[in-house]
Image 1 (cartoon, rainbow, N blue to C red):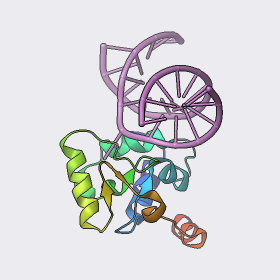
Image 2: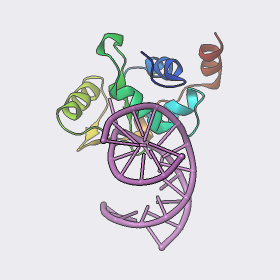
Image 3: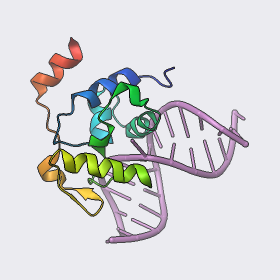
Length: 112
DNA sequence: ATTGTGACCAAAC
DNA sequence: CGTTTGGCCACAA
C-alpha cells in the first residue's frame, strides 16, 4: 500500500521521463507538486515494485551521480548506457541528458 | 514524544 | 575535490 502523500504523482512524473534522459530527485519532486521533498522521492523509489515497470534508473542525484550503492548501481548504470546516456565513472552529464519537460506538456499531463 | 537515519538538495566554506 | 549546516519528511527504535 501507499506510504506517503503524492506517491501517485511521483510515479506519474517518473513514468514521463523519456528514454535517453535523466531527471534529479528534486526535479521529480517539484513536477509532482512536492517542492523540496526530493528525499521523499528517493524513499518511495526504493520501495517501488518492479511490477510497475517504472524507469527509476533515469532518476539520479542533482549533479548526475548515481545514488544507489552496490549491485543495483551497476544495473542502473547499464540501463542508462543502453539508452544512450553517457555515464562516466558513476555520474552522467546533466548538461546534456537532463530531462527538460516543457511547461505545456507538464500542465497537460498533470491536469488531465 | 524524541532521536537517528536515509536511493536528497543547496549554499557555504 | 572535500565537509558542514540547515531544510525536508517518512520510518524504525
